[in-house]
Image (cartoon, rainbow, N blue to C red; front, side, top):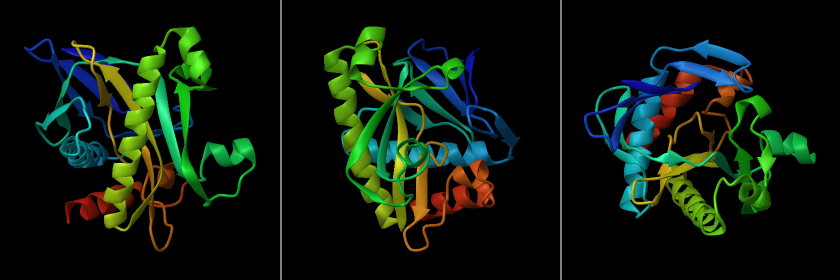
Length: 231
């Protein structure tokens, strides 16, 4: 039974109340769903890419909601209660931070910047800080610390993984939730929908910016990311 449908995924129940099925849609959205399209095969690519990256992170002792890939577009996941906050980690200047702070695109950020965004489409997912999170009751101080620590570890691990594939991890968006025991798990997905990925040599985008900025064939970019991760 379907219990949730978002812009990019559908969540369905299973016979086990602690397990869910996450189905990746072929839809593409940008600018808070103001720009939309549908590309056949996109969901399957994100499912396979997310599977590879979740398995890699689990091998490196990152707790995630991922259980296993069950078909082309779906994976089995643990049920979690999602925190209403998105974590963005920026390694290279691109996207909103360039406009917001008047920065030059493509400059290395060292150390990486961690940002929090309030998950609320009606408000446009505004940038918030730790004190906002505490005031809104999204998470407590211990949870914020744990989420921040895990986010930085995930970023470091993925930078190494992508670097070996000839890719630069420019920035990434992460989401977390708690399972029935209260453990904080990395959730959602890790894909070119949620990561900016540039070719290491040419700085060509191989992510959703191809769609967002009309820079080329988005499916080509996603297929190329999968090809490199599969080598």
